[in-house]
Figure 1 (tube, rainbow, N blue to C red):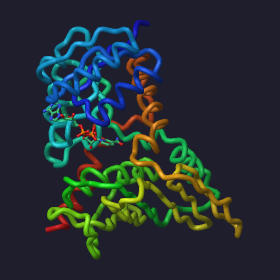
Figure 2: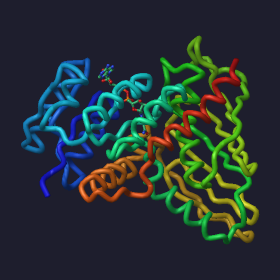
Figure 3: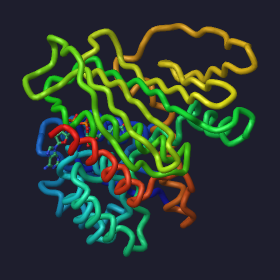
Length: 328
Ligand SMILES: NC(=O)c1ccc[n+]([C@@H]2O[C@H](COP(=O)([O-])OP(=O)(O)OC[C@H]3O[C@@H](n4cnc5c(N)ncnc54)[C@H](O)[C@@H]3O)[C@@H](O)[C@H]2O)c1
């Protein structure tokens, strides 16, 4: 079967990352079109990709032009969060399979509309919740489901960015904690019924619109508590950690992606190393695995069961909106 021809909307950190992963690491796909408001950025990426793949790359002047390009079979949306509903709607209406970066929408009403459109289409619409494809989360899910450690009681998460000059407090929920919401739903198979936040002493690096650090508290239907300690301006490194405290043990994903199991009085070996600067280093393999699953699903017509759906995007938007409402 010929290569899946992919067009990318928004070629900042994520769009350029997906373009490079597709070109260098994913079989059966080729980038054939780009659109970004930043012309020089788009041009430089187009030249880089075409030198690597040998493919001609159409540089478009609008989202509408990219989604209606006959040389595009599937679209990846990496524009800013608030534009996802509009860009995904255009892509679905043009009949294109689409991987939309998270979140589906910062507001659940917008997420609901676009999820309905996605569900009514016969297209592969996927949300960019790539932690589902990270080896450590896959292993944690297997251990939880083994039944060896009893039930999950508490998910204790840490999420730290080096610097977030333009973040707002609401974005810590809709843009950051949305990842923890999705991975917790995937690990537990449950929805969240509440979300609130606790503030603390602010770092001097927080802008005026931002309460940083912030702790998020959320309960699932069965009563599991998830806490997410977010620091958007850690200065020292990027960290994503998660501990599942269970009835008979503790499963912990560390900042470098190792899974440690404390069980039956036995401590796991300690890990150490240099922290990543951002998500691109820590989750590189997860992005590549996610893209491989998405391309494979479109080509075979059989959806990979771990790809996040529009309904998953909607559920995480609904949960995070409860957190945003609690800020008022
Ligand atoms: N899955 C993940 O782990 C992950 C990680 C980081 C970011 N993201 C998501 O990816 C998306 C992009 O994030 P980023 O870090 O690449 O941001 P970025 O700021 O680096 O890139 C965004 C790009 O979109 C372009 N853009 C702005 N308005 C546009 C428009 N109307 N049409 C087309 N392009 C437009 C900008 O010029 C820029 O190049 C966000 O929604 C973010 O939440 C996901």
